[in-house]
Length: 79
Image 1 (cartoon, helix red, strand yellow):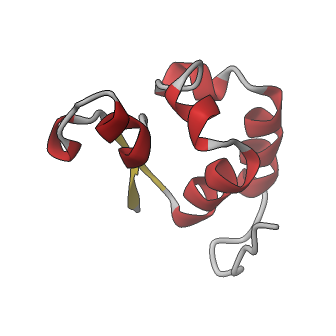
Image 2: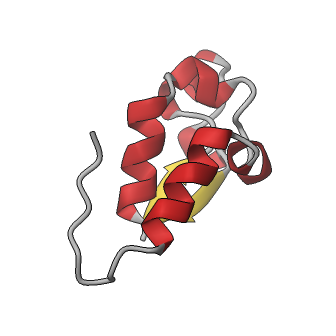
């Protein structure tokens, strides 16, 4: 599991928020990489700054559905 900052650190600093005060969520490595490959930091800081908002995205739903069908031993590459 990896710690995902729901508001990216770069965006939080622009808002004057200390990094340790930014909200986080624990994600698997594949999901964390998928989010950063799919969405810009501005998008993540804007309308996608909560777990619920992320889960409402169709692309995230499709990825999680696909990932849940993969064997746990399979190494998943995110493109």
